[in-house]
View 1 (tube, helix red, strand yellow):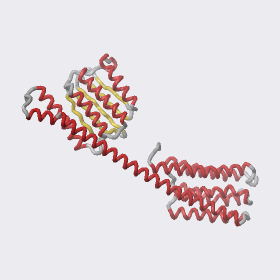
View 2 (cartoon, rainbow, N blue to C red):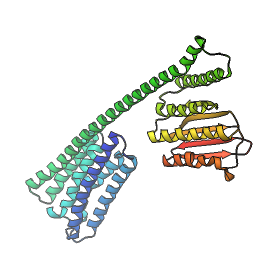
View 3 (tube, helix red, strand yellow):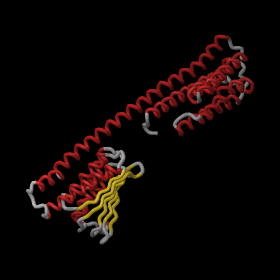
View 4 (spheres, helix red, strand yellow):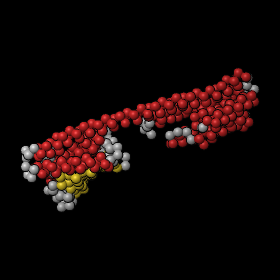
Length: 377
């Protein structure tokens, strides 16, 4: 489960606590049987094996599913909490209070499991049944009222303490989850605000500056440099509008970083058609690795592909992200990479490996190149 949510941590803690409680009771039973308190019969060891089997069933399933399963808890209550004392008395010949003590002791951990593994009324019925059966069992061995009272108190208090502890840690786990959710929401809002400010600045320094200059008549609007600049800025606006219309809950850090790589390539006269969709939130080092790898891939298109256009797509891929850079240029034979393509190994493959991702380059001479960046790898 990893670290998990606050509720998962609370469940893991209770499973550990109740598991250790059961193990302590089993240890007492093993010591008692090893000292010959089973009446000289091997049946006592068979009963101990049954208790161990129930323990493995309950906690093994709980570990697999993350929490106790009601059918397994009921099995433990019936076999360990209720049937074991009678089996020890009638079948294993444990007719004295010291001899049967270990079988009775297991009732405490069984009642604790029932208190947190069953719903309210079934749990109360199970705990009361265990307590009643243990009172009867001790009376059959001739135990005094002090022993019976102390043991009954242990059974009931084990259930009560386990239930209260579960209530407390579950509430703390829920509060922790709520606090984490608020923190994530606040951070997402902060990042969105920072990105909005960054876009405002970018629009002010590019599109608005260009329009203002043209409106004042300071440049020839029909000149090739001005038309080229307008085309790049129009492409930037289209990507910005597309992201606002299509993305729900984007990862502003990743989107902004990829956009920075695209705009840097466009400054070198490379036309890039970029599409972003449903980008997930990724760690900062992954953002840097993906942006740097994309920048290098676009640089390679500009330097080696002998084409003026590239295509970038970035989208959620399972639990991670997939970024693809495609060009329809000259291509190359991956098995005989030219010296100028060494950057693929150092700036693309290496960066992705260091961030826990993976890069794949597919190219054929005359048919262009496809660079795929995946995280996680």
